[in-house]
Length: 118
Image (tube, rainbow, N blue to C red):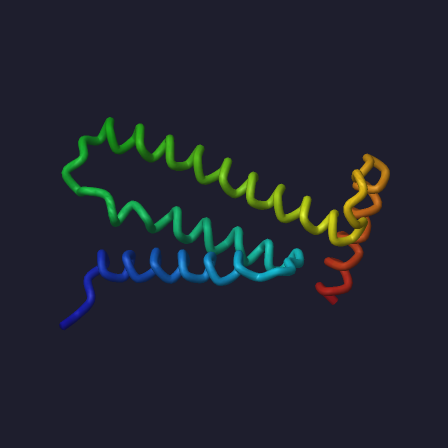
């Protein structure tokens, strides 16, 4: 039996969600894993509409799409912020992270990213 476009969307959404779940369960994260997390979450949010009922009116669908886009952006930002905070704690210990230490941390991350890109 041939797969329909809907089947492909369902499988794509499930795959993206599984990738996100596997990546987020890692104990340590790098810029590369954060990028992979963001990509998996974006792919899921692009494809998850296949799970909604198809009989929704255009105005209701537009309202839901707008709300989902806002929620997905907020969720991504919250998750990335919490992972960055966890990385800061790993780098600097349990001490309070000051603005100067946060700048040092960002420089360190940028340097690591440049080295990884080479």
